[in-house]
Length: 197
Picture (cartoon, rainbow, N blue to C red):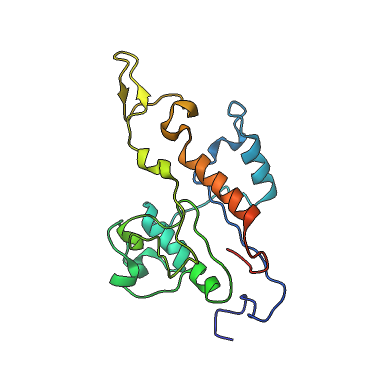
């Protein structure tokens, strides 16, 4: 077995573990009595909750690439959103790619890699993923005018307003679509004998 692969189970092993990862960036309100988050609190109660965490870099793409490749941003030479490490530094193996190469089906649902140039406009597909990554259709409205200006009654962008899902484009939000897709995917996965990540 190659160095660093001791924890990956051999292809002939009959019992494989399923990996599921969920990341949340800002959970300051878990202990806030004013904010009602029963499902997030339940999830946190079953998982590991880190109270003192740090990011490798203060930007999304370098941090995500660092976590997924196991290399620091200064090793990847990524400090922004405009470079793809496989082209600029080296063809490093990602965690999902390692698992995929050892018999796991790997899937990306929502934002795993930072979209755009930093993941080759493909979320590193097909290297890291068994199928093309899923992104909700409502992501296209992230900068859309969806808040009514109380003075003019005209929809504006960059305003803070209560979110009424029924009044949003497609009557849903990206997080809702992503959650529904992930749940449906896990319930209807075609080959449940093949381990997944």
